[in-house]
Length: 170
Image (cartoon, rainbow, N blue to C red; front, side, top):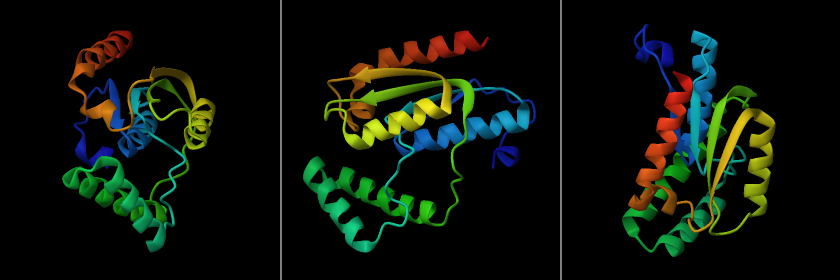
């Protein structure tokens, strides 16, 4: 994908993604490193490598859908999340995502902690600490998963973090 869609002379400072997109950003940075020999930064917004959707059956998906509807009480948001759960289940079940490998480029992890340090989040952070040799974690104790991306008051902080990463890479 990268080879087909990026100009030959493109310089990438980093890849960024939220939720499952952070996992994708990590894989893209690894691939860019393989292709170009460069180490772009990765910003992962409350992302996980321990995604429970692989092989998810219909009963589990239906439960996840109900939980999303109850949690967000916003039909449009819940429908987006339901679609995402369904897509992830198909992608990961098809084994299109390789097992993550260690990465020595800078990884910035935005960690939503409003719901606490759940066992799943602890497991994910443990995996990430093993994979990312240059890892910074920014904790957001007052934000949940969705709040990290929807709260406009965080825009200035995100801009600062991004500028710092770009300046380090120059």
